[in-house]
Image (cartoon, rainbow, N blue to C red; front, side, top):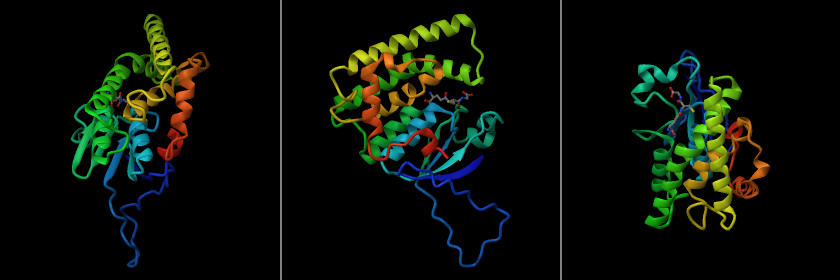
Length: 235
Ligand SMILES: N[C@@H](CCC(=O)N[C@@H](CS)C(=O)NCC(=O)O)C(=O)O
């Protein structure tokens, strides 16, 4: 697993940790461990969602790339951190958290950034995150995986995914027509979570120009301070 440093400005410092065998000069000061370590894959949408929230919330984090191709996510060393054998996993001090939506909720709640202001807004944000993984993500991530050559899809399944994702994008476009943000008057983790799928829709073969309100909402989110694209914040 490669270890790098991301930072809250949205730009990765990409500093490799010194190799264990390297001799440390006596004057070298050991870098303090960050509060957060994100274990993920730079191709993973759920990993990006967590990195994006940390970046927008201006919380620096260490980043460890877990190679899915080499099966690092199924090793005992990783399974003690994430029992599901999936990325992402976030270490917050001594706590290891899994499932991107649960991680977003934890970070929003503990940093008071991008959380709903009322219990109603918190519930609304959660609702969008459930909807996302139920309706939007299977099609977008599934077809993207096929286009990237990491997933094989039966034609019937691909058609089912396409129809589901198109219906979900159309719904999102309708909902966003009169509002700026999904769960509140301000951006919340609902927007970050759903953005972390929609931004990959073109790679899945969808033309987002058919959804102008979605495009306008993406631009609003992309102009928030601390915003970064995956290649900026996942070293
Ligand atoms: N519901 C999970 C999904 C995570 C997920 O699907 N991760 C993928 C990479 S994008 C993964 O680890 N796949 C390997 C596997 O499931 O064995 C989340 O939101 O964190």
